[in-house]
Length: 224
Image 1 (spheres, rainbow, N blue to C red):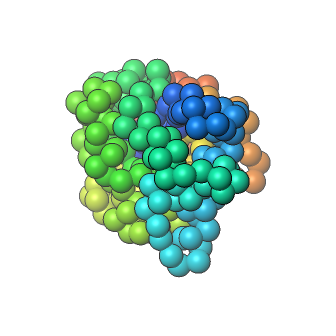
Image 2: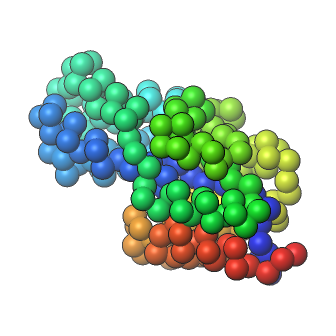
Image 3: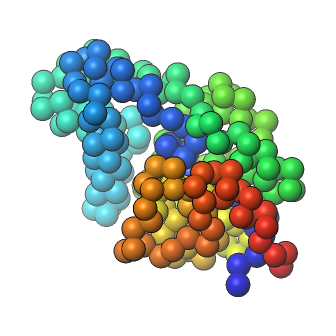
């Protein structure tokens, strides 16, 4: 029986950050905007593949490599930089602030766990005003592997200083929830991105249409 968590850990890219403004940058370098999703999926796949092989490359390097592949090997350094520079301007998802605020008001600690670098995540939080609601930022770079291996979630537990049963992950990616669940965490999945929770993954403990519904579901869980 899951209970109300002490700490809620948010995935960052796509869960908190909107990638939508990058679509225009794809068009500006001569690529169709519709391949934004395919590029991001390839980046996640390649980061995970490196992890499975026992290797690691940071988010910017994997993002650039995936972009060159999606671009058919025809993109120059300036074109790649034009797209990736857009990360420094990306906004928060509209449901991020109210969800985080609801959790903070309920007395829960809010943390971020990202495949991206700590510095870029902190810059996003500062830019979006979410920094006032976040107690800690953790990057997979600290363990040199992309989610979802258990070692990533165990590292996050050590960083926040709480046992697994007191911590919840919130994400829009079912694979992330699956990984956190395997590490003993409570999980919350928002259907805003994927719409359908893939049956191959362990079902999240809390499911909602968006982050606000998920936050409400976590707050409503019984105390330990």
